[in-house]
Image 1: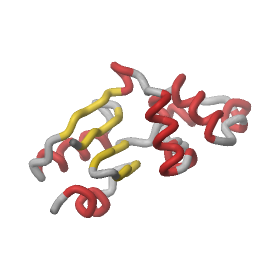
Image 2 (image 1 turned 90 degrees about the vertical axis):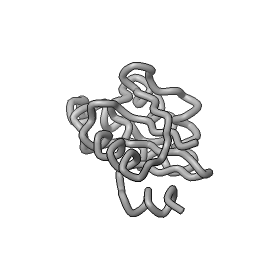
Image 3 (image 1 turned 30 degrees about the vertical axis):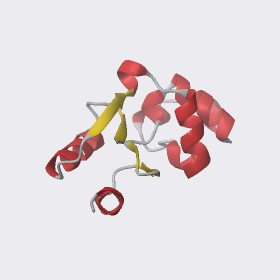
Length: 116
């Protein structure tokens, strides 16, 4: 089963949902706004993909942080603590399935990973 994690109303998430529906691929969805982020997920993703890729530094949540807060995000542990408190700063979507992890929306990567 494919699992998609993100925030329902995000434009990038809307593109991901549309792509999966157009390609008739079933998925489950975990909404950070409703259900929060789970430490186990964040650890697994950051270990597999790297904490730098998981942190959305171009989003509004990051940009609203003080320079002091931003400079203290320097490794996996500090990133996970920050993302638990600010799940909107997790790059979206996070897609897991077929023993793969994709972070961010890239149609070509998703096509390769999930369409046989």
